[in-house]
Length: 321
Image 1 (spheres, helix red, strand yellow):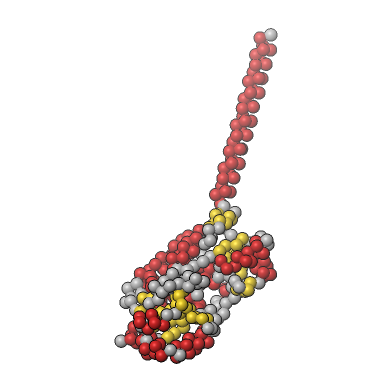
Image 2 (spheres, helix red, strand yellow):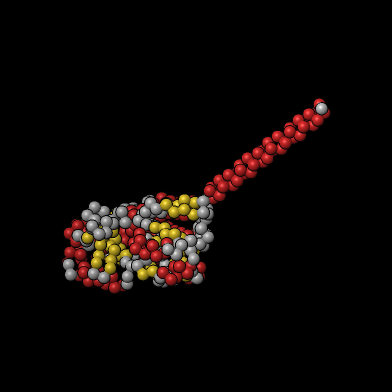
């Protein structure tokens, strides 16, 4: 009798131990699963664009497209797989030429954008009217707006994180900072930057990218305190009286359209007002077009833009002596 009781007790003990082992295994498996899920969540990337929109990526995007040439330049420098680019006039590298053209922000090719299969499309804020069409095809929209050199640096930093290439991003930013430090040693020179389109001419203010480049290159923007226009807060209407009073040593034109036509139209407008003829910039022949490929959405080429601006100021200074 005692023997049977002993055997039964032993069996019960073994059964309880087995149950505990099962529970331990179950807890262990559950813990491993939870840890695995945590790892997956850690791999996800949260990106905040320039309009404050939060975009979630499960991992580093394997493809991306853009309608902004400066963003394209930054993405390529960071090693991203760019599958779509904006329409570009002028010379292109073979790498850029081989990327599918998507049109421009004002006249995009929806068919080509969808055909790229890009995970995300980087666009300016003006593209918002088309956003739903692209998002319906499964592509995430990222808005970018670079109005200063600091904006460009912050953009490089953000995309360095998104594409897991912070080391390269840091190198580019360091190069920009070094160029700014070098350019700031230049002597200050009175200058005027005019954004031109046929029939329209506006003075760039300090809060425009062009004004920022001018200041960082060592120049002095004579239009800095002119009242901004309501429609374009980074620009002011031309005040001939103020311009003549401040007498710029160089006048630089920037345009998205035909540069030669814009310069011809501006010089014709100056010829209609004798006051312009008294400006040092006019007397010394220091009226020039800034190359759009360097100054319009420069991206990492902001280094070259600063060099170009610094040389322009140096030439105008020598002409004024």
